[in-house]
Length: 205
Image (cartoon, rainbow, N blue to C red):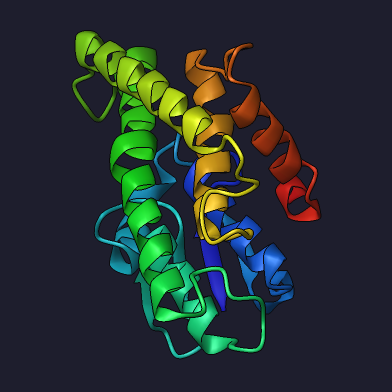
């Protein structure tokens, strides 16, 4: 199988860390797509993912699966003997899903909008609205404050162990640096958690 990705982008990194934690990096060939040059806009790429985003996975039978968490769900289900990162019990699965949605809606998406609307990276294909990007950045900082409070007394985001929620939060914080949003000195809980995740071998992929 092949995974079409842009290694510097946060969503592909989420998939790579997920696969690394499960010991599955050797299960796919990673093909680089230059999104700055618009390689994701070509007819060939759009045939794989009409949303024109990275990553997208192409299975050996030609089936294409787009969206980060859909790809992660494939590996979770296809390799049941690897560590469960989307929850083991019904309660764990529900809690991980809850956090994944919170992180997606209130953290990752605003970070992406801040990037797209304040940097002009995609100005050739969208109409950036700087004020909207700046407002999204404020929301990102508020959520980081929420995470700092939540992590007081907790080593991980949920379920008392490492899950996909930690992956998504970690990669979002790392990506937020491109818009100059960083963990504040007073957010000691968040910084300690971030350092723990960063020290994991999977964070180096």
